[in-house]
Image (cartoon, helix red, strand yellow):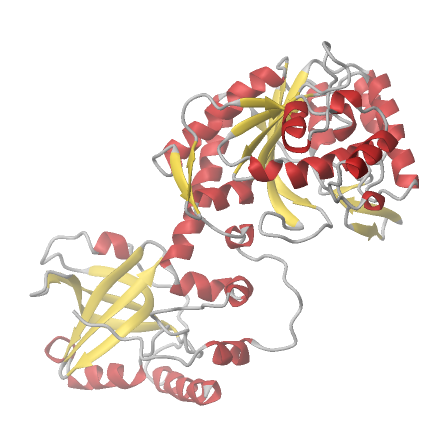
Amino acid sequence: MEDIYFEQRKAKLVNWEKRQVAYPGRFEKSLTCQQVGQLADATTDIKAAGRLMSFRAMGKLVFANIQDSSGRVQISIQVDKVGQEEFTFFIHNLDIGDHIGIQGYMYTTKKGEKTLQVEKLVLLSKSLRTLPEKWHGLKDPELKARYRFLDLIMSEETRKRFQIRADMVRFIRGFLNTHQFTEVETPILQSASSGASARPFITHHNALDMPLYLRIAPETYLKRLVAGGYDRVFEIGKCFRNEGLDPSHLQEFTMLEFYAAYWNYRDNMRFSQQLIQEMLMETIGTLEITYQGQKLDFSGEWPEITYRDLVLKHTGIDLDCISTVEQLQATIQKKELGLPLDKYIGLGALIDALYKKYCRPHLVQPIFVTKHPTELVPLARRSDENPKVLDMFQVVVNTWEVVKAYSELVDPMDQKGRMLEQLELAKAGDDEAMMLEEDFILAMEYGMPPISGLGMGIDRFAALLTDSLNIRDLVYFPSLRAENGNLAQELANEEVPGAQTEGK
């Protein structure tokens, strides 16, 4: 069926080529569709352009809608305005999906619809493929992600979702600039995998003949810049972690990280709450959102609970009484908690698994989780009051970690010791252990001021704000399993093209 439509549209393109340049290089567009729809009646010499999204012929009159990035506007084509020959040509050679440029004047229909009366019309680009059925667009989530360009054409909801994400990022940049942070860039290709516990992607630099790793976090390079004299730095960029897929994880994702000299994690807690609350007000105009039917309230002061109290509450295990992985394994077995103990290498990995399975699923409203066990984050500063825990916090919402932050470890001797412990875990088979970075240790040895840093997953937070079930819906082109099929066949299987007409 699709091939028939394709051939028919190619024939119409030939007809257009006899009248004008088929794909002109420029059109003088004076207003967006949204702006056109706000003009007063009788405004003349309006030049607009967009994609034809509906087309309904009624005798000597056609009502249609064109769409650009700002929205849609209704247009009309009448025999007595363009002439019989032109009118007949348009009726037989325009298709849904064509890009057109028009010139005309505004009026309001009897039903009160602002409409642009066409006096001149040119084809800017012929749509050789039939768009998905208008009223439903693409229904299959896999197709929506694979062919995002079609999803954006057909779905106002998708366009709004990505606009909220863009507004969110724009606000964050402005907020940090206002607070004297400098935006910087750090390497995506790195000589060591560090900055977080994750399995890296590995590549090879042919010219230098050396292995490189796609960054899992920009942390150690941002800290080098603080050592170099920057008091406050931030980066919004791609990170890569070669781990499993689920609704809150992607292997390629966008991360905000910032670092502020002379702050501790308590300063950072106050600042991050302010950033998030102001971001919500600026982006969506409220501190209360609904995610998949669950109301989430970001207002006021968020509660705080220690990691130890959380684990004790939900598992009955007191981490203060645990000092070795063997002790924790025995306690888990005794309580019959059902974790596969042979899967986790090291005390930190087992504690983290315990927390993620039995504790985090209970955290729905925004909350600060603080004072994590030292084994969990090799780059965080130990607490002066209790060296077994870190000066650290996470913001957890809807069972998702949306922020991780801590007072940074700036003691080079302690840092090197903890990285060497990570090397031992790697030798034991932990493919998420961090690598030793001698250059990073060297920067520390020249002296780093007190620092607190923060990481926020942009895609994950945007999913919350847009009530999106999967963070993949906030990524224009997520990585997907390779398919042998083709677009035309997949879409033909998805749904039969419809008439896509509407009238006023």
